[in-house]
Image (cartoon, rainbow, N blue to C red):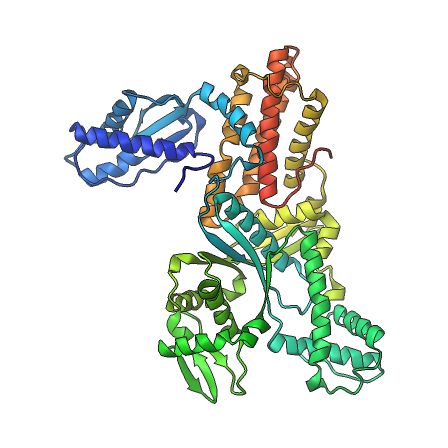
Length: 568
């Protein structure tokens, strides 16, 4: 395993403390017992340093009341580090009641500007070339029964941003859409289109509770009639599968178009019908039977999913011999792990499927897959607000708000940003008025404007500064504060990848934009701190900082699928 591409200073400090603890134990300053893991965190207040560890307080619980006190443990560690302090530290030492604080050296901080510029678009990546393995993110996977609504759009933004984060973390990522082109929902679609088609021919029909009532069904029927005329006039409702297939293909075109517009692209589209056609579900059925997880009742074959943590047992094979979605979904995961051999698989599911998570994880384990190779990310639905009220914009789509309608209203960038900016397990309120604003109140506009302003400054300055700037001239508090914020991107990327939580990225980008604003404002308040200073050497140094900050903003925005504009 190679070193991190952008080594986390936090990890260097953990290694430093670990080595100091080992030396202190060898020298007899600390007891030779197994001590807790060393964790490094950022303190709440900058005056406490850049990083801190509470290791001494946790170690004291291990050594007991007769052993050294937390402050004595912290002092012993600090004394060992002081024998050969690293050049990236300006200061370190114990602080009550037992912390060990670290402050980064200003000259080392300034050197990181050149490091960021050298790495460019790769800055924030956690590995250089070797891969952690093959990872699949399966997301969206909406049935082709209607256009993508904004709730599923959250799935799209979350899944795609997660794939981008994990690629930066070192995984070889495949994005997959599993489209359910078989089963009961497709039958309902076919029946719904058949009824609307019959209406166009002048026949009276009655829509049932299982039918799709959206106006888009009428559009589909009208389109089919325009192309095929009365070809399906005498087809019975129970034989309307061809009609449903035509409608599903059109809906998939809508889905692909809307997702592409939202900058969501898939490496693979996997069909549920393929699972049935190739018979993988029969292999899996036999495997589950051999584990005692299948029983028969009323002519159907059932999965003992309640024993695996589900809210109820589920039918695998109906009494007429047709497999259910549960059966094909299990076979689909069998294909992922045991046919295509992905090292890791992540599914993005709506929270309404939460009850199935324990059983699916248990089933995958029963297929012989290590539990740590399989993750399911759940997301809550979206409420769309306008003028302070929940709205339903899509009367043509059966009282749903489509992703396309939201993008029409606020643009792709704001849509992507807002859909991924909250933790996935919380309900989201999407404020169209806020997302439409071109002001600092709108967080995505604020961040994009910060990038555009830096790009404009760099464009006005030309390119002669690039090789000449001396970053050691960057001494102002606002400059060092900006560098400190820029150096957090690899940490945030690691946090987002470890917790499968890309919402950390837009939050970080906003804080970085605030740091650039503080730097810019310092130049407005004090002429000597302007980016385009009168002194040539100082100007070129500050232009380097501007270029590095612009790059980090661009990398963060790219990770959540938002454009980093050069002008606004």
